[in-house]
Image 1 (cartoon, helix red, strand yellow):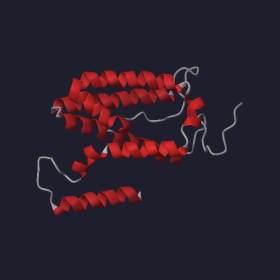
Image 2 (image 1 turned 180 degrees about the horizontal axis):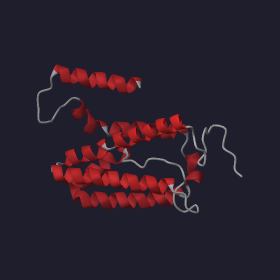
Image 3 (image 1 turned 45 degrees about the horizontal axis):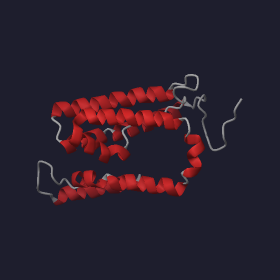
Image 4 (image 1 turned 90 degrees about the vertical axis):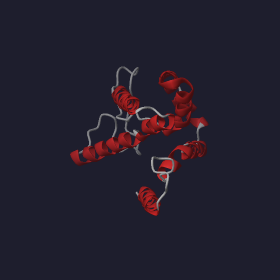
Length: 186
């Protein structure tokens, strides 16, 4: 019987106490809800109608739920890991998703996402052996680059530039700065 590594508090088959479960459940919900801004950003960036945007966000939520269930389901080492890891829309795909929708519409984006999923499934079988190629320094640079790549999409919204109100008021900037300070402090 495999032992739990010393740096892991709860293994896949362990059941934490109820307060811990509630806290972890809320954490998962917050991660999922926060990631729903990405489909909204894509829909807004490419000018989808309200109906198309609602459909796009709904399909993102459905795909996230199905992906999370498949990840949590452990079936003979073929499907899932048994860990409840939320499958969310990642900011790493924001730039390429906007480009795909602008050039080929939602069908190109859906096809690109499906193909990416197939590659991720294949990569999941060998990623353990490739971890030596991704030290902390490389991973950190990738995370920074993802953060930098979403700045062109998020900064105008952060400062309320280009929305229906073209004038940026001092109150809007103050709210943006306070919000950013709260995010950083948390």
